[in-house]
Amino acid sequence: MQRDVARTNVASVKSSRSTDVEVPVARIELFVDNFERGGTQAQLVHLANGLAKNPAFDVSVGCLSRRGPLLSALEIAPERITEYPTNRFYNPRGLWQISRLARHVMAEGLDLIHALDFYANIMCSAAAGLNPRTKLVVSRRYEVLTDRRLHRIGEWWSYRLADAVVMNSEHIMRAVASRGLVSRSKVKLIPNGIDLARFESGPPPVDGSQGGGESFRVGVVARLCADKGLDVLLAAAARLVETWQQLEFVLVGEGEQREELETEIRRRGLGGSVRLAGAQADVRPWIASFDIAVLPSYREGLPNALLEYLAMGRPVVATRVGGVSRVLKGGSVGVLVPPGDPQSLAAAIDGLLRDAARRAELAQAARARAQDYGLERMLEATITMYESLLSGSSAPGD
Image 1 (cartoon, rainbow, N blue to C red):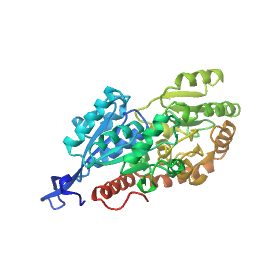
Image 2: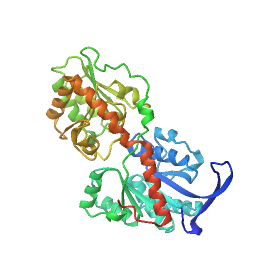
Image 3: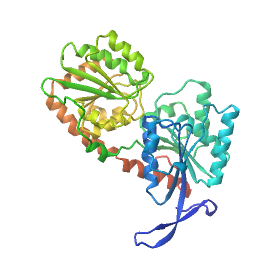
Image 4: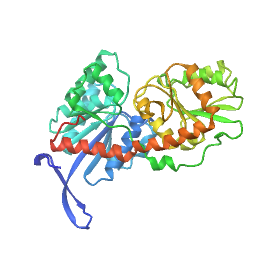
């Protein structure tokens, strides 16, 4: 990297010939809202752990809250993780935390700060704005365009201050462009990455069916919230269990909609057919047990769960939202249905249950498609962006 000498941090690392050489090391801080189970948090963990193995980077992590199980998945020293607890930026506590982060950026001589969440974007934009020599990368990883005025202003402001804006799907890029929120020259498309080896050779399935006899299991891995379309899945399930007596639906995940879903399961008389498995430290045995994996969301960016389904060779039925259609190649790698349509969802699941050959065909296509979303590709694209920004070369836009 060729950067301003005043901003270059230098460390001694081992070369391939086992001699000590002086190489520039970029000091990078990744920033996230929290460490709850979610796609954004998982991508931060992948990115932090990957960069930590690269001697060209000195990596630290900042967060608004340490809560969440994914904190323990970080493979960096605990003292390299700093919490800035606040849920407001326009009160004394919020301003104090912004000041803390700004002082931290200066004291550590950070070359670049990369925010991965909406509130992280705001926090880091304010702090980096006080340290103009530090490059700022913000992110847009979700489809929903807020109508709250303060949120729209905050989003526009963070994009304006940023040196680059990372988006994980072309659908999101188009949605943001339609509102004129960011210059195209700042946008960098970097799809999510998944640890393929971990999902391709996972543990055995949870007491699952995988088409044993007349028994089948349809499953979803998702946060239990309104955006995930789980109400639509239950409506589809109510149709299907009338025909398929040995059909089980499994919802893996936890969230604020759990009580509502439990009520709906009872109302529809699905207590013997639908299982709420809760949050799982390892979702692989559950996905492995699915005969069909579903993604019934109303809206998405580029969902990690979909990539996990593909890597484990599951036949997929998903809604045509966000980046899903592109991942599934318009329906050649999985079955696409309209969001919010239980009849279409039920028909798609029914069709696959009746066609073992089609399920096998989609399983093979899924494994092949997953290769395009390996973790190494995400890391390589991110590092290339960092190097471009820190060297002052061409703009990040593709």
